[in-house]
Length: 304
Image 1 (cartoon, rainbow, N blue to C red):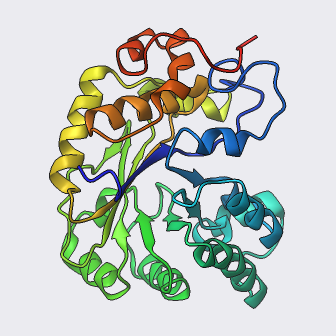
Image 2: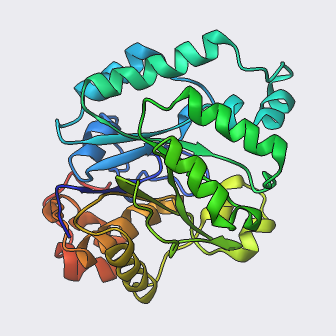
């Protein structure tokens, strides 16, 4: 697979505390350096999930561009007001109506990345209860129309969207792609690649069925390490549905204890993508099976 057009990474880069923190696994345990810069030395892209909860200020986003290599790419999740209005209203106690300021702030953040040549994709992630109805179709079209100048990926997690013709027409009109997702109760990794799609977008949430429905901490849903066999199966699907003629964005969201980083390394190896394995060798302490990819731990900032 073409290493230039395929970007791989994790959903988020900062998990400093709480359930499944990354300190002592991906980042050195006693260290207060620049996590984004450290991450970007090791992976080619990151999916920004924090933008779902708060639109980042343009100055913050500009800082991201300055602290990452020129070839690095960001995929940015839309603010929850655009895709989860009920959730926004419940959590914020405020009207979910989209305002001109909402559009301006979201576009402003995206434009900083686009102008720097670092915007890989914009993700519109809809909730599981977002079924295909006339009202929801209209809401989807409004969102796609509002962000049609950006490379768009749409995550739809209900089987009612799996009758393709109408959805294909809508996505084709806005040159948007349908995100391919892997989670315990919904999976669409093997959907056809449509002629209009200039890239594919993949999200791997893990397969922790028990924790998905029954958990104390939200992060428990994603507490899962894909097996080597599962990674091999995913690689086969990416080869078949992505390929050298497309751009591909691959993100692991099974983030507790940096399992996402470990699985991203494994998938990159399966796809023969180039990663700086010498900078990832320390992961073999927590994930011994990575040693055959990265070598034995050593030579990194000490994990103490």
